[in-house]
Length: 65
Image (tube, rainbow, N blue to C red; front, side, top):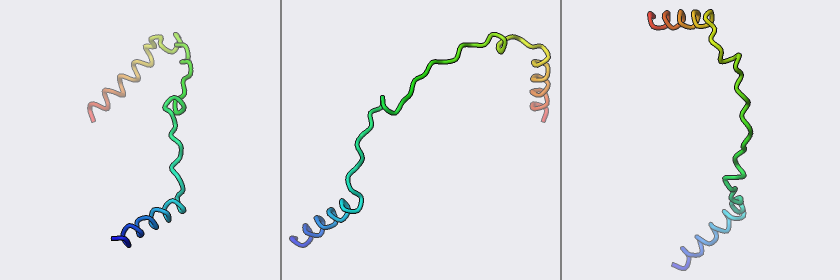
């Protein structure tokens, strides 16, 4: 029994010597970043009939194939 306890201690000591200690815990707040959203562009959201036609024609081809 004494030898088993000694082996575990030496194994633990070898692991600690090889790997050292665990790194410090990082708080969730330190891992996230917040930034302001860009404002909406009304020109981008405007309806474009030519663009809609090409989009719908591609959709029709996708459904037919």
